[in-house]
Image (tube, rainbow, N blue to C red; front, top):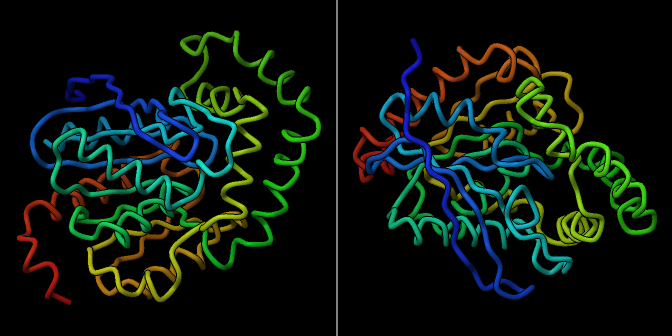
Length: 287
């Protein structure tokens, strides 16, 4: 039988380049062994609900955050509000709000890149990195081809984004399978904010540089997928080679962690628990 864990929704406010904005998060479980999970681009924090519950059932205190411009957080239309660096600042501000000195920080796609930026900008706040599908050098062409047309549509054909939102928003999420609901939430966009998010990411920092990544000393578990041009396994493997205390795990497919999550959930639980069970000073000096 699955273990039931407490779930609480919270919010905090943050001064950003766009003004004073509200960010929303969900806590799973309790205790001092913090884990922060971050979603992919344009996706809601709810995508990590299954993993968050699995981690919390093992005694970890998990928080999923809607980064600015996503999910139920505010969505300003200013591109200056959106970059991996700004998102990393939001994660550190979340830790401050929660009173969490350190956490295992991780995420998927954009969330993985933001986690790397947190480790670069605030290394003393990161006990470990749980990264799925980082988007680095080998994803450039596919990323431009996938997200460039979306940015163009949001900026110059906003009625198309509004039309999709009009079709998807009324669908009750409780009546459709979980991942279908996540896709409906992902399609529930506002054209001005959607264009600003992608503009900011295209022309801002997408990920820390290779030199910055090689200086990260936190332990890391990196999951890569085969046959995924936007999130090539080569990027995940390259990152595992760059980070001095990283381990690479190859998923069987893009769908494994969604359709049959048991193996990768177990890897994530073991890794996150090890980050909290091993003294921080020893982890920094052990190869």
